[in-house]
Length: 224
Image 1: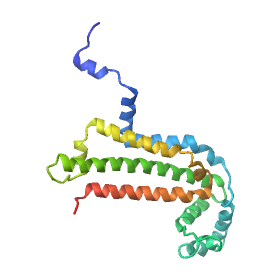
Image 2 (image 1 turned 90 degrees about the vertical axis):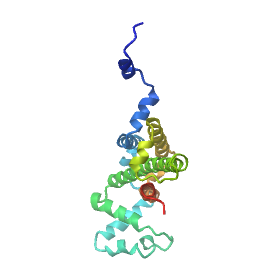
Image 3 (image 1 turned 30 degrees about the vertical axis):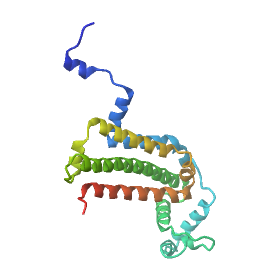
């Protein structure tokens, strides 16, 4: 058997499936693309759905808002949701998202379902970003305690410099796995397919991205 030169053999040696998945997972952009694709595959059929149950009352409410009673929408900020007597909900942001859908799509259910799908995608991306940031935050603390002589890590770039390629691949791939499990979880179809079910996905989206930004602030700032 003829042996290849060292440089050539290293360059062309076969790689495992995990290696290629990890390499792709190391790219945040590619990871987000995979999450978008996964959600579209799982939930694209919901876009063709129609209004269900409570959706009809909300569409009727929005019709009133856009036909002479815009004050109804604003009242959601200081009164019970939709000014109903049988519930005690405070959901003004949900009303704003529904009003935006009505403004863009009028009475077309497809537009509302498309927004639900977008919020599901954003939630999945949020899970990935938060998971990745938690791994980095944990590693930052270990580096400070074990190998930094008590010195603070100045910037995220310095933290990134301390990471080996295996660390980068593992963190990204594990975070992608967590987000993928979230995306395909069997409890989520109701939230996506039922228009008013977005009360959960909208809340989750804002919560996750708020937590992600908080972790970025923590990792880039020096402790007091």
